[in-house]
Amino acid sequence: MLPITSTRRALERGVEMLLARTSQVPIPYPHMLKARTAFAMMVVAGLIAAPSGTQAQGKSAALLMSRAELTSAAERAAASASDPRSSMIAASLRQRLRDGDFQVGDRLVVSYITDVPHLDTLVVRSGRVVELPGKITVSLDGVLRSEVEARVSAELLKYVKAEQIEVMPLMRVGVLGDVAHPGFFAFASDLPLTDAIMGAGGPTATSDLDRSIVRRGTVVFKSADETRTAIARGLTLDQFGLTAGDELVVGQRPGSRSSAILGLIGGIGGLLTLVVALGHR
Image (tube, rainbow, N blue to C red; front, side, top):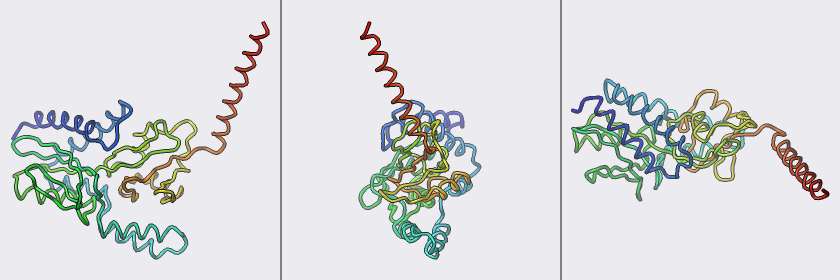
């Protein structure tokens, strides 16, 4: 096996190149690449330092919703009659349990070590399958994000003697509203909501995180109260129930937009006054 220092350098280079090359969306700002690379390197550092593959899997899976947790959440949502959105949330959770979390076009970053380090980005293809190097096909039908590492590892180890297997599912979500650089980004599914907001440039001077919501299509999927609680608890994108295409919309302080508009109008008015004054000279 390669020395740890050599392994780390190879993984560092591979992570940076792959995240720059294989994101579902372009990275419009250089600091976004640095932030995502730094996050990925936290995963790599954990791999190298981990005493065993089992312990590494447990740490990662703790940030993703297990099947038991999803089942309990679906039952609670179905039993709640006070919130009209409860039936929609319960249906969404039951669909996750039945179909799994992966759709065609989703991506996984897979790293492992044989005699040399390997780092690959796999795209979920028709039939909800991914193809590992060596034409090893793995079905992700019905697989949750918390289960994908175990599934991929089991299939890979049938054909390759590998160590330190890590699978990072990416999720393409929108971070919109009152952030510096709103847009859609491919984030790791176990990324905390706060880190996703910082990945979009962070809140602006007029932001109000307490007014943030999650939209799914045209529907408010998570209310401001739910989002505020999730941010305070440090929940990840997966733990908060987000899926590809969802939009985390950061709220704005009341009156801040009108103040900005009045300021703009005042500035235009001042400019017009100056132009008129100059014309009378």
